[in-house]
Amino acid sequence: MRALDGIVVLDLTRVYSGPFSTMLLADMGAEVIKVELPGKGDDTRGYGPFVNNESLYYANVNRNKKGITLNLKTTEGKALFSKLVSKADIVVENYRPGVMERLGFGFDKLSKLNPGIILGSISAFGQRGEYSSRPGYDIISQAMGGLMSITGWPEDGPTRAGNAVGDVLAGISLTVGLLAAIYCREKTGVGQHVEVSLADSVIMSLENATMRFFATGQEPERMGNRYAAAAPYDSFKASDGYFVLGCANQKLYEAFCEKAMGMPQLIADRRFKTMSQRLQNQAQLHDIIQSWAERMTTDEVVERILAAGVPAAPVMSIGQVVNDRFYNEVRNMFPVVEHPTIGTMHVNGCHIKMSKTMPEVRFCAPALGQHNCEVYGRLLGLSLPQLEELQRKGVI
Image (cartoon, rainbow, N blue to C red):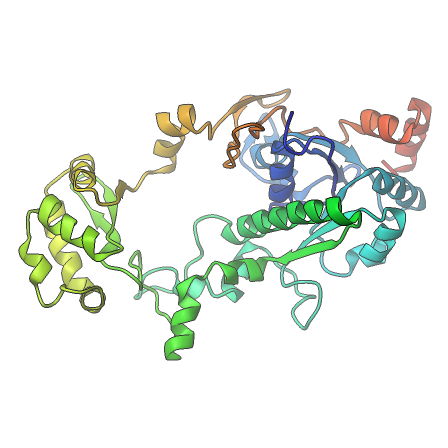
C-alpha cells in the first residue's frame, strides 16, 4: 500500500514548479497522468543535460508518471479531457491565469464535470490582480519576492539562489494544499481550487527579513553567509576548503569559545558578550574565528567543533553530496532507475520519509505519449482503431 493509492491526477504542468508537485504526489503513490501536447511535449524535453538525446532534467522530475498526449484546443481533445476529469481526483496546471478558462476548463466547468474534483494551479503572481498577467519563471519570483535583494555579498549585486528555489517552494506548497483539499473532500465530498504563486512562495520564505523591515523601516542588506539574528553564524575557510558554523544561542557560543577554540576569554569580551553585541561586531568576530580555523583542514575543524556540541558542517560540493554514503545508503536520496533510452540513471530521491507508506521511485519518466493506449483504453474504453484515428487527426 502507498499513501495516495487510488488518487488519479491529471498533470497539465510543464517545466519545473508544477511537475515537482505532481512528482511528489506520484512518489507517494498517486496515479499521475502527464498530459502533453502531441509532437512537442513538455519544454524540458529540450533542456539539458542529455544522455542518448534524452533529457535528464525531464527524466528526473517526471518519474513515476504515465504519459499521454492530448491537444486541448481541438473539439475532440476537449471531449476526451472532460471524460478524463470525470475519472480523476485532481487536475494540476501551471499555465498563465486565464488559460484554463479560455480552454473551457476553469474550476466552475471542472466542478460541473466532477463535483469532487480538486484543481491545483501554480502561476507567477496568482490568479487575479495587476501582476497576474505577467509571465514568470523562477528568477522572476526571486527578484519580485525580495529574495535576490538579500542574497549575495554586500559589495556585489543582487544574487539568484543557486537552484530554482521559487519553483521548488511553490511545488511543495501546492502539494501541501492539494493534500489538505483531499482531506477536506473526505469530510464534505466537494472539491476546491488550490492556487499558489511563485512570488508568494518566495515571500513566505523570507523569514525575519520582513520582520526586520517592519520593526525598523530599513531595508535588510546583503550579508553574504552571515545571519541577521545570530552570530557567529557564517562560513569560514579552512586550509583545504570551507565550513559553516552556527551558534544560535549563548550556550552554543560559550561552548564554541571554550571547548572548540580554547579561547574562553572571548566569552567575557565586551565586543561579543551578548548576541546583540556579537551581531554588531560580526566582522571582528569572523576574523578571529578565521585566523583560528585556517591552519586546520575542513575535517579537523568541523570534528573539533562538533565535539564541543556546536553545529558545524563542511561546505560540500555537488559531487561530494551525490557520492556521500549517508545520503545514498541511509537516506536513499539518489535512487537508480532504468530508462529505455538513457539506460541506468540516478534521480533525486523523495525527501519525504514515511514509516508505513514510504514514497519511492518505481519507474522512469514516460516517452511522449507512451501510455496513450493504456490510459485511454482503461479509463475511457477507447479501442486501438479509435486511438489511431485520433492520432491521425492530431488530437493525441
